[in-house]
Image 1 (tube, rainbow, N blue to C red):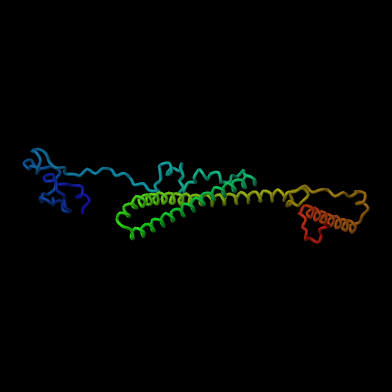
Image 2 (cartoon, rainbow, N blue to C red):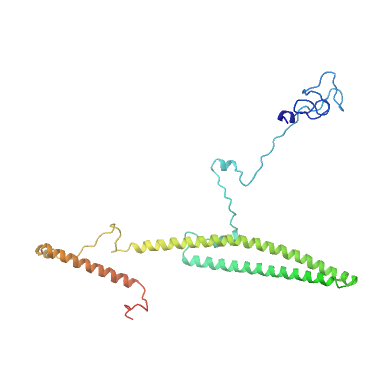
Length: 272
């Protein structure tokens, strides 16, 4: 149908206008106003049916992808990830946490998660037990008289209500456990990332010890050699002296690293 005809009605009878501009009810050709001697059907003289439909503005539909005015201007950013519940915020590892704080938060994480897992397991067993009791009572009712069934009916009704309540608790605990597992995964990642940063910082700290090679940026230590002795030595003697000093320097470095390394009982070089 023509889009213009969809918004028009016959002013004489109020009928719809077809594609060719004629009324589907009375066949009158559409005009916005009636003629002078043309009355409207069912209305007093001088009045007419509305010739044009009033189309109101439709509110835009909103979805999870609809952006606000601030988001379109770049002032607001939206994430589609579920928000972290506040009760699990104490598990998250911060940038300033040390190893002691990480251990404390991980212990709290294990305690809370164990309590929630136990609650979910117990309510699941209670739900299954309640369901089994209702099934057995249903089989029992087949072998009872009418009077006995009437006497047992209130008990069965209470059991059904209890089963419905326990099922709601079970569903709530299952949803809570799902949210907790997302928090657990995020806490594990944050703890691992923080420990890796701590190890990297410690490695860099150990790599810049005084007296060790620092890619040419350290201040070299002068070798204690008598200047008078250097004046009396030949080139060959100076070369041999330099080789001896370098050998002694390498040996001192090896001894220093061995002293810093923890002793191993199975090491044959261990004097103990």
